[in-house]
Image (tube, rainbow over the protein chains, first blue to last red):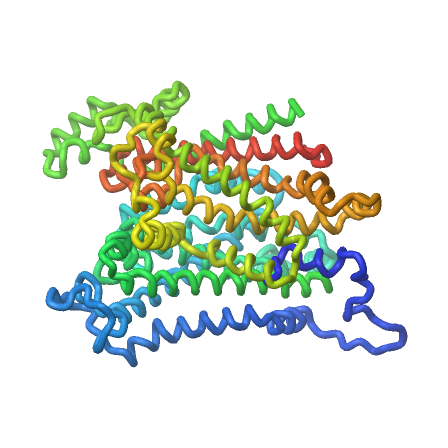
Length: 315
Length: 316
């Protein structure tokens, strides 16, 4: 697992490893096949075994959460006081919780909300952030300054605190929680996209498009945003991981989804008492799911950043 | 340098007022007045109106905000109607305990992360490095409360080394300091989580520096590897730690919400958490603003400290 920020350093600067020896350097007289940057990035990504495993883990979790309940039927709607806190055994492979719900089936439900909210919140944050950042970068000047100071101010307000205060007021559904998390997460993508746009907008192809009479919206949507896309894509992956973690925090603190809907964090809300009572099956399987999904998203993000670096290097 | 600091302070002041304004507006939108909390949900509208008038909550929002800022400038965060104390006194009472928990964890994390990062950089791309990176990334992806629960399982329930939560008899900062066993698990949890993020930066910074000419020169003049690492690499590779420490200032003072809730440790984080359940308006407002201001201050201190430590960095 090579740290993304140092991979270039390892290859380039370490004595005895001349950068000229890199496989991409053209040799005299040979014909080079020029492949597109995206294809290069894809190849680099597919050579990263850890990233492929992580992708597989994510896919498995999507299948587990969404297809799982179709195959594995369990009661998740009516509490049953006769079968609370049962240890894993026949009929309940992962036991039952304090309401008599089957824990394995509940983990599937929790997975659904984690993935739905994770991706939805990331999408909301990315769309708002990309448009805001692109606009700020494009208009420049005073308006850009004001827009970015606003981002600075919002960025200073601690994320978890703000999200918690708002989550106390709105009933926890998948939509409201995605909105709350998304609306507080667009600041970083906004900064990233603005930075990209600032460097892109003075490039020749943008000037050329302008000279040919392209309007502002065409410039933004056809030229600036597509070229800033690699930065955005990497950020989305981390946004998903962060949103799933934040959802877990909210659930653990008791401000997650409204019963009987559940998330992994909600299921861990009582974890302390459960470990004290020895009900390990109510804690570790859920916790492991949570860590695995976040870990997989982080690894994919790291790998994407590395592989898109390859694309950027060719530009 | 002085000019730079003055300019940054002015910007920080503007940002602070912005933070206060946005927080104030947001909270007012969610809950226009604490009257319902104070008088109960069954209070008559007339009683609520009278209470609002008496406490100034019937004035226009802008006027309320201006007077709030005025009080804030004098260190007055308002009054907690639930706990019947001034919010400033509550903050003062809890800040010490929070600072002790976060501070101890920060110091321990630096002491572990710095050698760990250098070790990984020296042993780059070996099994040891890969294993440590894998552990780091796993801890980094783990919610802090879940790590805390795992530690409670092993250290408290299975091995009986530390108590599973902080005893309610710990009421003062001094009490927290003199009962290290009580705080061992919260400090340990926070330390591991911090090491996970710090050592990633430390490793890449050490790797960067290992490739530099001054390291090659130090080796060429025949210094032992130990001297190269301890005397030359260490100081240069530690620069990112200054920034990270500065960015930890908010949690250093305002506490760590999740850890304090998990271990039931009476700090600012737990105060805020209980205020959430009680809709204790002035605590929520004050804590959010405090967190925002500390973030601004932390950034400022980090930037100034890094220039002082590394003259190559010029600020403008």
